[in-house]
Image 1 (tube, one colour):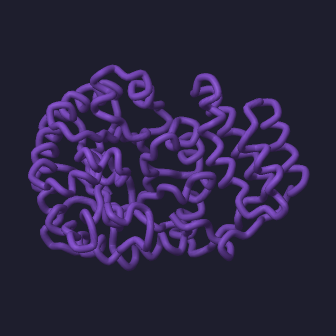
Image 2 (cartoon, rainbow, N blue to C red):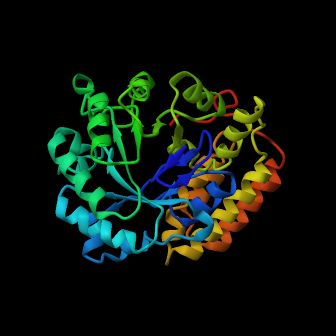
Length: 338
């Protein structure tokens, strides 16, 4: 699969951009376990062009992470074009446009998935960004606004006509948010459309190696994107790749191995974030790293409420001492659904 001049090999696996999640500490672990392409947290065009400190910080990219994309969202063409110029100065490999975020405060003002309610503006914005960017431009979007307006086949054709080099489709409508089952049949229809010549990346409900293989084999997508299913489970990329190559399912990591990963991510989070933010933003990861452990409620509460670094590190070692080489099964051995 290629995005512009980037050769991503066969069946690449992408890490989805997620606010307050895909920071450098989490990306480090995902890359270590085989994520082929990653993105920064998504960035507001308004925040970037106003030199917002949080937006500017998200532009940080490290060479070991490449290929890396920066994802932008906004509802004003001129602002998105200016934000593209600023993002390019960070030397990403890809500029991705977010037409998929369903969060109300974003979509209701016409950004993210809100663009699905204004297709002419979506196409105008896409063309303007493609013309402004010296590097490949891709798009991530959804099937449509709601069940009555699943327009992704037509939208995909139009986006391709604007010059994008790849398209990621989340198999839900904006109205679904993250509920219900992702509709991979619609993603497959886009991929099988003879008019489509750009790579199609599928996203939604891929939580284990078997589902990943089905996405490639049954729906023919060029790549898959993993989002929430990887939170607290960065080894998922390695397990999927191993299964695609060998047909063998690797065992769940031991609790001791998970402690090593969680500790590494936590230490990097403290390095990259100022003040207690590095602790706050690790909490959802901690919760997922140790999901399924028996008799864990009291220790979990301590882990998710402490603001003392030494105490958190001590708690991690206590978890290792108590659970050691156990491999707790979650959902019958697979991971929680995206």
